[in-house]
Length: 301
Image (cartoon, rainbow, N blue to C red; front, side, top):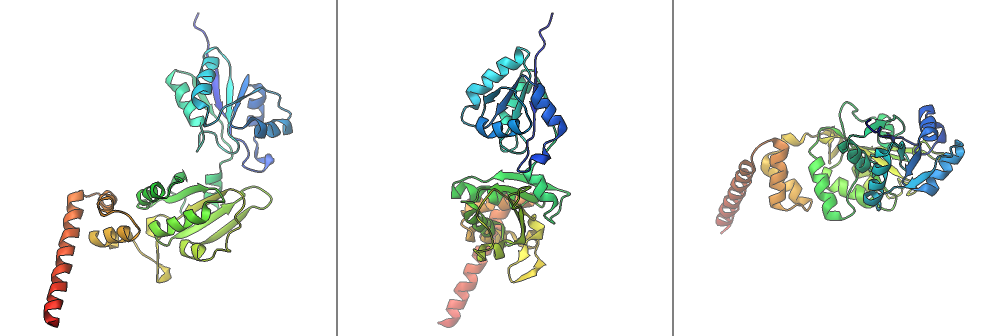
């Protein structure tokens, strides 16, 4: 007789307001054999609130390899396990993605439950386009790597969704303005909590006004896609990056600190052309500019 394996449940938890816990999530957490929690002390408050007494196992980014193997063994032995994060949807910017992938690889059933998610909650109240969006999550901590990611996603027409911590948000917004140009932005702070706050502005304004944000709590940043980029000299106008020539677009990226080679590669990707085509356009422009300068110098002599 074939041994029956357990089920891995991915259970969302509230991002702030306990009333956002679903009936199904409460029942599932009460019925499974174990709960794999990112922070057992933090999750203990949630379980106590809903009078749930299921034993917990610590499962987080720093022990996911070892504990993930333990969880898989338990699942293969027929135990049911629910994975929860500190807040919101497990597997979104969360080690739950790793255990879900590993479970599927060995044929274990994975059951996702719907529920709270900070990114989508902020998006629907952002005033930005919701027909297409790209979830980026947390940007890299190191500045160079952060600029590389922003350069890549900066070509997307879809609305961009970022997460950020309060101690980095000023630096990150400055980098966003530097790489993405001025765009409309909605910044959500402390979603669903008592001091929930939305700031609707543009990147240039929020970077210039250091008093515009309260640097407490967790932030979600919603930024318009490339076609919503605001003209620097006229905040009511919009510019489409495709109105620029190859050499102008490469020049813009280089002015933001991107190396010439990387800028050419990025422009080629954005436009769907070969790097050679962009390179040749840049070289022709440089040659033309050089000839113009030489002619001007000769006329002055």
